[in-house]
Length: 256
Image 1 (cartoon, rainbow, N blue to C red):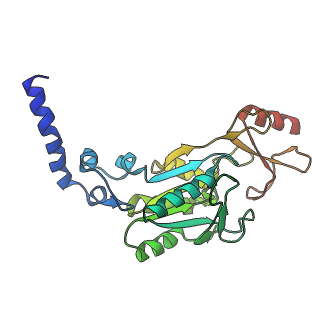
Image 2: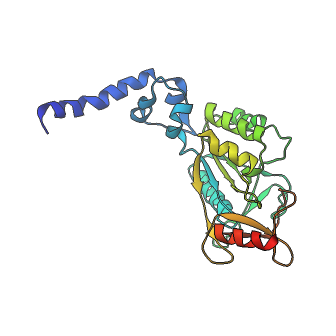
Image 3: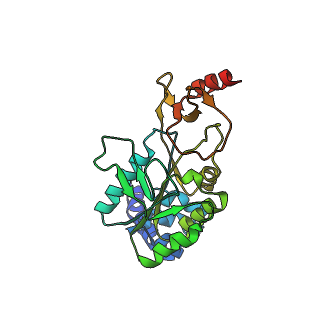
């Protein structure tokens, strides 16, 4: 290393630290109680949050995949971790989740030490998500984390409100939900989250029920085990299979 390179390597980090004093308030603050490095945030000095979303998306993640891919197991593990580091952790789930009962989330993973958690809030299509999130943020000053189960069932407006809150307020949020419905169509809420650029997508997979390959879709089945490709989108139960792309097409062809 020559003398000029040595001097530059010594003073460059100092310039970045000094630049951090001019950061917009949103970038210089804490997210979920974790201080962001001035060296990192200084790269986005003068830019909007939308342009710097990659700085914060470790705190805003969307765990999505087919059924039986371990999404709720991941929620429970995240909950246990956040509680261990003294976060106020709020679980929100869809109303009338019949797989576990009222205001509860449950995992099918028998290897977890804890398989059922109580949810503080249930949502339906009429729930004002901004009011829900603000009610907890006003109650707790810092280190608040939200875990939203079955996030695919949020409406477009509700999902946009969650994105708005995640973009402008000071908290951590993880979403857990399906990406595609049983017809292989992206859910309304899921599409908003994936298109927002705010939430980092964490793709999860299951095992294909037919061939043992990597399952990416959830297929609804009838009592005879045949594929169902018409009907109400929201139908919570155990009459589903996780299938790969090839096997989904196979079952669909049989139904024609």
